Length: 583
Image 1 (spheres, one colour):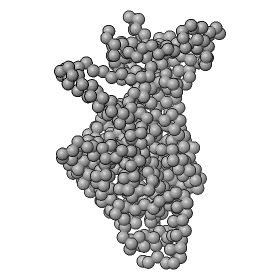
Image 2 (image 1 turned 120 degrees about the vertical axis):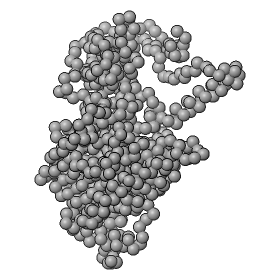
Image 3 (image 1 turned 180 degrees about the vertical axis):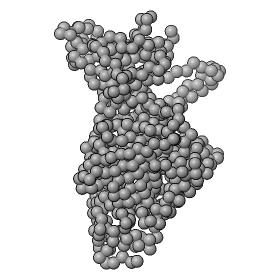
Image 4 (image 1 turned 90 degrees about the vertical axis):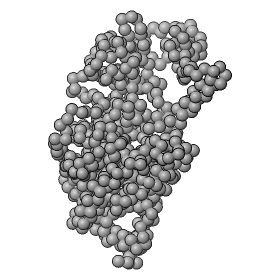
């Protein structure tokens, strides 16, 4: 049916309001026909007379007449599309098409959400060594695939989606092509899929410019400010429900289905290395009870673990259920599982389900969430499954106050053989920092959420060592140094809460584990990919120089870095014993 003049006037007013809010209309790739646009516009206007559209929504779908709160979201984890191996993607789509057709027949709005990492991070095409991830061809292929489900799709950027480093010189150029291919005006999205129900996504926008590892999922400040405005303007008290989608989970989510490499490399959580920003997301969850669920991927691990979904009750996580999402293709899974998520909403709450692509699209109910009458709290029923009955358990150890592993101490030796197998413990420093030992490594944990932050001491350095923690704050008298550049330094910034973390052995080898300049202990060892590629090229150039000038095929080559090799206040030495210096 054609839109009436009144409807068109109302539509124009809505468009103006959206523009003022900085929103953008969502179109599937290729764009709908003019006739479809007119029909959709008329349908929306009729629905909006009875429902509550959000001024921040970039798209408002036609709601169910039977239950305007009803909706279905098909949630896809890391796709890592490889054009050579599309069979799993086609069968996975078929599994969802059955679900989509049934719900559309009932008049229930359905959407698809991809959690990012759209292309394979390796060369997949003949006659080129260029990585596929992040290229124009990658995003076009992903847009074609996501657009083929027959319903609108949304996508958030993952850590590989700006990896087109051979094609694009900057993150900004790469991001522009990503947005163009997926018909997005901003990295974030807000889709109103049902009455008082928003699907909201935040995407990573940094790769080449990453301060540390390029595989940290970094949401920029503008998106974070936008998200904070959104949750503040859609309170639970007014009935709003916000479902969030990001590539990696926020710190504090409680998910323990983590890969160790993400922990030690500092890329587990959103904005992992960003200090206070890292904690911002969980603080917003605690403050704003409208945030009901948060879906993430990133780890390539399955959904057959009880810690792949975490619940809010008693865990200081607001009213939010956090949900880990697996992968579809067999070539990308790290534990053999091929699964996606399904989210079904109603007026009273929602269900979280698993779609098992390895079992012909079998659907399993994982959790039922029910809203209380005031919409401020959620009641959760977790559904057991025989799929959880297995010996595999991928997890990064997360301390808890009642796990019996906390070491309480005054000072002195706290661990006799820290590097031994099966040692699991943690302790608090007086400054508030939390350290622990797990799998032969010293790891730092966030003091508020106890989520793992990163590697402090690796297995090679901890093996055969003992750990001691001793007070190092200054006594009443200052030790006066005569060393140039250090005069009186021991009288500066006195801190009676200061402690020294010491590794030692019976032979007298002692290592003082110094904190970083910001007071944290975990080591930001991995720099971004662009810097590491330059370093590798320099090493290759050094080998080529030795070969061409001295005929040496094999050389003992090492690299050296700053900034610190001593506590001295005078720049004297740059060598590292056993590495750049001969023993």
